[in-house]
Length: 353
Image (cartoon, rainbow, N blue to C red; front, side, top):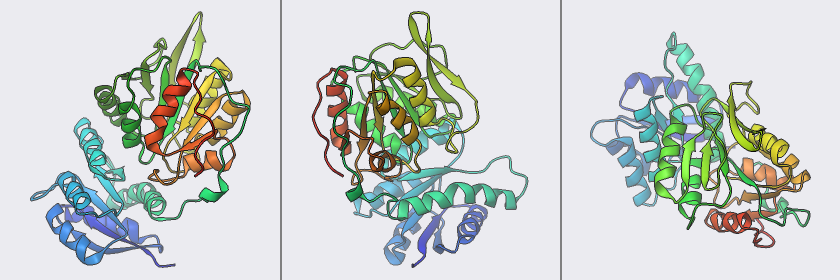
């Protein structure tokens, strides 16, 4: 199999070298070129036709966000992974880049002792993303069929959502497409670090009719409000007297993730039983599959995003392949299906992936 050809774009010669070294450590990846700014990157993309681009955000001449916009305007669909700093500004800029058409992001290593440690940090983050964005789905769409029967047929008491790679934009489209706040509380796990989830909650709050907050723990669940799991903390729900409240914790990672979708789904089943609607959107890996199984076994209903509209069909593909999705839907259909299910009006069998 031919190696994955990557173009590295960064104004720092040190960062270009570290990223190139990290990528070159995997024989399945080849760095075919580097560029110092977005303008040079446009020329090199046209000449080299890489399989994937890593893109710094802040660069002279043309920054990474404008480069992403220019590439997408010209019809280039090559996956783009942004490099961001773990700051509030970096988080906001990263979300702008994702909205402009970037596929995913990685965070620059900070407080590392030496270049070798920086290479190791970038390698662990970046190589799985490169392979997921450029590789075939681990699940064949033809193997996934909507589940028939046995699902919740009345309005759920809560909705739980999981997403990862491509999730910020998928969530934006989901909540932005709603005509009115949902009549039940919604809890969301998006794999993101601290500060990024704060910015994500603020952005989602602005674009749709729902009130969206980053969960901090002990908030009483109320209809029409969306609770986003905070970065690096698991989000759960628990019964507290007559109320159901949020709970956050730094418990060990699950599926190499914190927050983890499985943790949220399982706690929701413990609290609400089968009176739940679960939604799994685009993302790497299989986080959410085991929690979805518990939700469905309890009598809840599951929706999975389809392969064609997923940036990576890992998480929703795992749910679909396990036979746990009552509906397998394109992203543009998910908001309508969620709104109908929230009101107890089911949309019937799902679209086959």
